[in-house]
Length: 231
Image (spheres, rainbow, N blue to C red):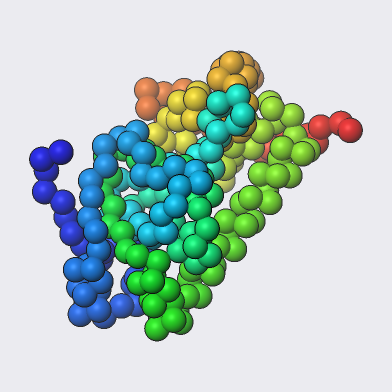
């Protein structure tokens, strides 16, 4: 890809407390690379231990079931980072990461990342906070898979994606509009199930489709559709 890479870490929230001089030194120590949309960054069980800062674009964290179905864990936007688990425990990667769109990443070694944590307690605390969020999100997914039907898991994922941009607290938007495959991956179900759920929500006037977004017109009704699966 011929475009010039913008070699700046100024937008990375984890590094906000660094002085301009320390940030510039870290930038010089980075390996910079541009990834095309859908290009793999690293694979599950691969041996790399670098930490990657998402300079622009976004990356998707996924795994695959034994049957080959993609399971999406999270999309990581610009200003965030990935790869810290392997940098901390030096074990193989715990998931596959691909570029969700054209993306610029800056990577540092595990040793450099650990030095940052030791020299900057605020960075270490923020990293711990992010790890705690990952554990909580994993716990929520385990509970969803254990207690909710596939249909209700779709409802839950829609609620997780909805923004608070509506004219009132009971209305929101999902933008840009996710694909059926993306929702299915997040909810650990099939595209066909997602299609049926979206069609039903549109019929009962809980969800409206526009050219590039979903409008959730009754968030409370959507919440009330969620019921624990029977034993």
